[in-house]
Structures are given as C-alpha cells and as structure tokens.
Image 1 (cartoon, helix red, strand yellow):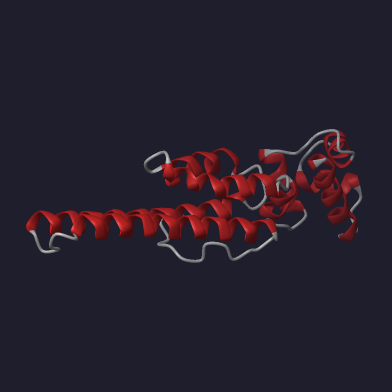
Image 2 (cartoon, rainbow, N blue to C red):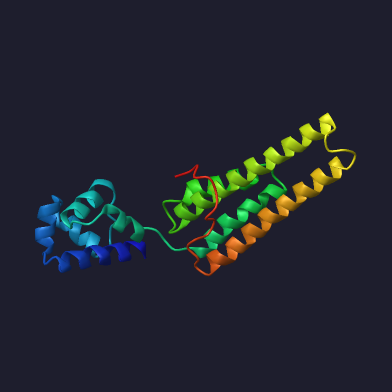
Length: 191
C-alpha cells in the first residue's frame, strides 16, 4: 500500500510538471525501467534513487518520506500509554517510550513528533518530581519539615504521579481524536 501511495505521488508530480517517464528518468539519471517499476508500484525508491527523483521533480525529499510512513493511531496511543509504566518500572515513563520511539519514528506517521514531545515532557516531569523528592528528603533529615514530613512527602509524590497519569490519559484521548498539539509543555531536550 505504501509503495502504491509513493508511486502515485511520483507519477502525479511527473505529470504535473509535463514530463514523460523518459524525460524524468533522464533528468534524474536513473534507468527508465526503474522509473516504470517505481510508478507501477512494483518497487519502492530508496536512498540515492529517491533523492535523484526528488531533485529532478524539484520537490523536497521529505515530502516523499511522509508517503512512505504508514498511519497507525493505535501505535500512537500505545506509545503514549507506555509512559504509564512509571507506576511499575522506575523511569519506565522515559525509557519504554524512548525505545518505541526509536524503533518506529521513521516508519509510522506522527511517531517522530509525538514521541519527541512526550519524552521531553516525561523527562521534565521526572526531573522536577525527583528534585522535589530530594528536597523533601533533605528537609526531613535536617528536621525542617517537622513530624508530618513523611506524610506530606508521600502525599505530594502520589499527587504528582496521579497528575502525570491524568496528563498521559488526556493526551491519549487527544491522539485518538487526531490532536496535533499534544504535550506542548516540556524542556526541548530531544529535537
């Protein structure tokens, strides 16, 4: 299916520029038979062939790459929900989504952007949460929080975890509805 979409895109661009297959193959410095196989959806151009076609068609290669990615909102939701793993795996909210992001960011549409934003948010949340916990521990050890300090620290930690879970669930519903501006908060660590 992906090959067919890319084939249609290349054929459509070629025709819109008024080029025959022979002219495009010549301008791109590729074999005519290769171009015919690409436009018929029998082969998918990669690497140098894709760059040559993009240059000959005066089109950014990124425009073609979007057509090579499949759409899978189920995976986007799974990627998002994987951040809930922090409840059972320490730092799972960062490392599990990071692994999924690295594996699929070039294969599924939307994963690159959503994963980057989500991981940036999770890193920000983790640094702030662990910073607060470290501060509470220091204040408890020095006796500055009084005898209620363990209860306050525990309640605050649970509250921050519930807050993160709510953010993750809300973002999952936004992804399901096709929301674009998911996780707009977070330090830009991954770019």
